Image (cartoon, rainbow, N blue to C red):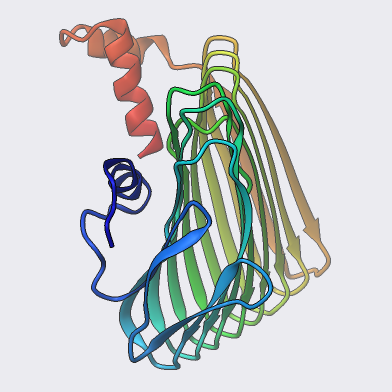
Length: 307
């Protein structure tokens, strides 16, 4: 692959890629796959009729990493992509996704990614998805991911959802259904600034005995930005569910947290925690006594909060 400097920069930001991966990968740039590779245990097949790929992981696959990043550098480009993951029983894999948009033009650029995970019995999946925007143009950078997770008995999934910076508007929708003894852990980190808006909605159904979910979102709203977070866990069995919203509000930022717990079984145990507030003055004072300016102290606190 011949990558230009912008593509390399975006791939580094969203997927920590400094070179072509050695395992299975599909790298997409400006609505085209610019590189694809399958392995003995992971097969990547392009869809027919619509944009996207099917990823098949054989049962008992261990230690494989799959990269599927997307970058966009053309102003005015809009796309919708469907990626389906079929994880065989007793597999243990890591999936690195993410989308970076560099828009230097006057037209909006938009990527809508629909990812569906079908996770087999006893399998373990670690999934990272980072979003990033850059470019000096007046056109917006729009990202609207949809994530669906369907988990079989005894499976586990850990998801890291990160919006780094530069995304003007995002609407994230995540739906999960868990069977017996399945476990889902989600860590969302989100920063908005300027007049950006971010909307995250989670609906997690705990359908099997012993299933459990832990959903934690941390956000920072700066300038005139706005964030809305909807967290809903539905307990349909003897299960455990926990959601947490922890946010810092700055300048003229606004944050709305909407927790929802629905218990349909007497043995379901569901908990929600939420906190929204400004940076504590004593934290700033402590760092400023060490020689930092107020702005530098704020950045240190925010970086530590979102880590």
